[in-house]
Length: 272
Image 1: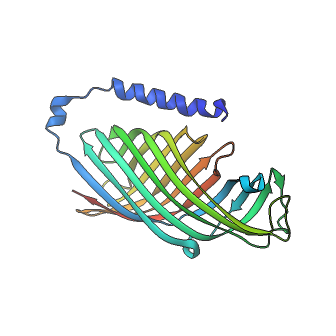
Image 2: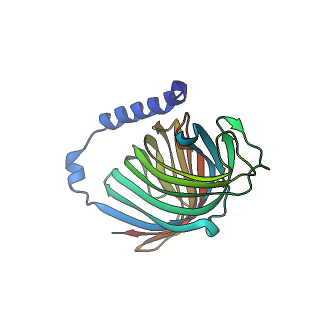
Image 3: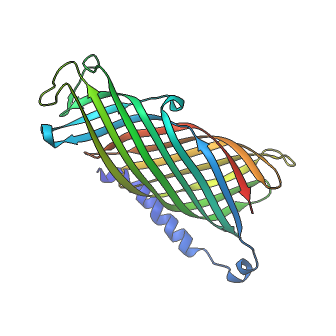
């Protein structure tokens, strides 16, 4: 892993930690403020675009497989998403849980043993990807007004991924046979810092623009996430439509190489 790629995320994480430590707790005022909770079930339908790198000890080589971009509606087999927030005065805890199961993703054997494989050699390769992403962050409201909110956040993101690929080639490539399959799994832990909040679209409007952004590093060289959209509020909560992007940038021989998840998400937030 290149230390220069970790320098900025690590510095940001350190500064965020010092900032949270320096903020006053204000115990008396916080004690009088009740907890507020929000639960948001939602559906995110991302496309997948990236590379998987498999170690093939039986064939004394490795292979990199390129997958996507793929149509999520035709390849998504199961999805479960929910986020939640607990807030007291200016402090908050936010968590987000995603589980996705993609099957029969159109793929291509990109390299074998570091050597490029021509697209014409690949007669048909498919990959299945199953994974979960858990984000947990604490936040402090730097801006808190009727028109806009902005929380500075810091925490971690965990990715658990299982992938399998079946390939069909026009002939053997080195020790790699013309047909076969492989599977592998990987767990990644990354520290993240960022911002989240919303902007009201008009003084007396029920419309608002929620947003979220974070970046960090750890098991990955760099991971970042961004989300922006629109929401309409009622007394019980709000309904929102957003566009969300999650990216992982890896180095070395890890299973997950450069992978991106992008797509729209629709959810309903319940406040209590």
